[in-house]
Length: 322
Figure 1 (cartoon, rainbow, N blue to C red):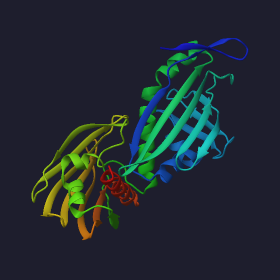
Figure 2 (figure 1 turned 180 degrees about the vertical axis):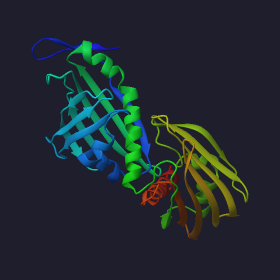
Figure 3 (figure 1 turned 60 degrees about the vertical axis):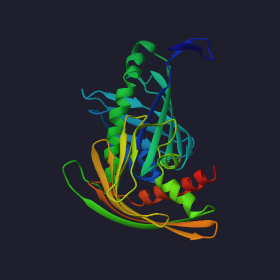
C-alpha cells in the first residue's frame, strides 16, 4: 500500500512500495557490471521492449551522470536524467534517477540500487527501485508498469550480455569448449568428504542456490553407475535452472565420473564431463576436480563455470566443519 511523505517544503508526495526484481545472467560479474556502466552497452538494452535509447551519457564515478534519452514506440521522447550515488565495481551500483515530462519537470524519483552477486555459473543481479511520485496523476501509471518494463528490459540485457561474449542470436548455433582443473584439501577423512559428495542430505548443505533468492523445485540423487542426479530451482526473477547428471563411474572413497547438462528455463546452455578424485593423507583429504565443458549457442563460459565450481568446493569445506 502506498503512503505519503512530507517534503522539505511541507508538501506531501506519494511513495509506493519499492520494486524488487532479480535475474541470473550466465556471465562473469565484471561483464554484467560493464553492461550497466558503459553508455555503448546501455544504449542497446536500457529500455522496455519496443522502446529504444538513441542517446545515453554514463559517467562511472560517484556524482557522474546516468542520463537516458528514451524513444517510445509512438516516437515520443522520454528523458531520464540520473546521478550515480554509489559505485563499487563489480558488486554494487546506485543511481538516483528523475524521469521528466516534456517541459523538463521531474515526474518521479527512482532511487535504484543494483547488486551483482556471484551465482552458480554466472551472476545474479538484484534491483531495488524506490519511488517518490512528484506528479502522481502522471507518474502513478508509469510506476505501475515498472515490473513488466523491467522484465523486458532485463530480457534485452540478457541478449546484450550474450552479444558481449561473442554469442549468437537465437537460431544461430555455436559451441565453445573449456577445460579446468581445481583441487582443495580438507581437514576431514575421505569417508566424510565422500559422504558430502554422494549423500543427498549432506550434499544439500552445499549444492543449492542462495537462500532467500532461490527456491528448490526438485532434487533427486542416485549415485551408482547409470544413476541420475537432478537439481532444479527457481530464482526470484522466475528463472528456473536445472542440473541434470548421469554417473558413469563410482569407486567408493576414490572416484566419481559423471556427465551433466545445465538448463536455464528450457534452454540447454552446456554439457560437461566431470571427474572427482579423492586422495587421503592421514586425517586430511585432497579433492581433485577436472571438467571438460561444451558451452552452447552464445553461452561462452569465459571462466565463470570454473569460478563457480571453486566456490562450491569452498562450500564443501564449510559444510564439513558444521
